[in-house]
Length: 451
Image (cartoon, rainbow, N blue to C red; front, top):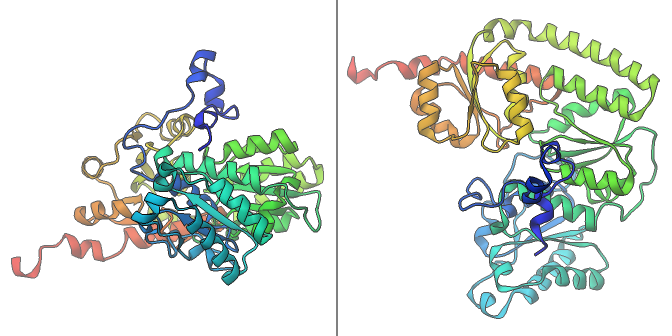
């Protein structure tokens, strides 16, 4: 296991940069008991890398670590189904006693022979890490014998939270994948998106914008990605970190080694999407592109606002409570505010200091940041503010059901894409359908036997 200290001392984080030298040495929050309850380091690493769709992803550990692997996230791919399949070494008690390295080597060889992938990713989990299995050596040996890349992802769950796992996955890509191949061709406007996972096909909603501007997405890390795309990502001109701080360290390392500038942004909402396009045009350094971008933004914003008018009439003044994480914790606040809705609160448990600062600016004095998102607190807020809709992940829907409140899934399990200008319209449609569904009026009525 690598020294984790470097992952808590991120120089690219503005929050870390504002600290004193003494405070900086302490780094970010270290793993605490229970910190992996919302997703462990292994979970975070797998979430980051699984969308590399044409590779085989082998979980080295007991079968439980690969539980519910089939389609375990709402990511979408236009190529292979390998990312939806559960490959595991299924370690048992005998392997714990004698070690699981040979079993891992056999699994890699079997997967390579049967599926012919361009690469194999191997994920370290808690049990093999504790018994001392050296997956780096096994992967190196397998790679030499098979003649294909076998990438070790050293991410045992006990190392820390899901966010740390995202960083460990980014580090594995930087060390073993990025820069190992050259692209077939390059353009002056090659870019990378870091932390965009194509949930519900959201990447496909923003790709037409880049195509219209002549901007080429060299690699999306890792939504709808192929191994070859990630391997040539070092030839991009600009990186955008999409998902909060998850892959900020990867962007910083790529800037240091390859000179690729980066910025942080979001594609949720009209304003955020336009700002992201402007930042790309500015960093790519072409006056012609900047002018073209402004024309596209003006056109798309006008079209979107015209289409949104009938929905805004129905949504204006409606109260919403948001319980999600990462970049969505603030960018979705901005998104629903553009629809005229009132955000009574948003979750901040998995948010960085910068995320919280953005939330404070958007919510004002009346908004509430929710650090404790347990069901009791959510029910209390819903009743106090007479919330019209709860936007959250699947675990919170039972709160909404019990309270008879309309619920809209905004996490990775969702099937509707909400990114970009088109995503705004989809979100508005879904909110109207949800809030005005007649089922909630029926739900609040007494059952027939009580009349």
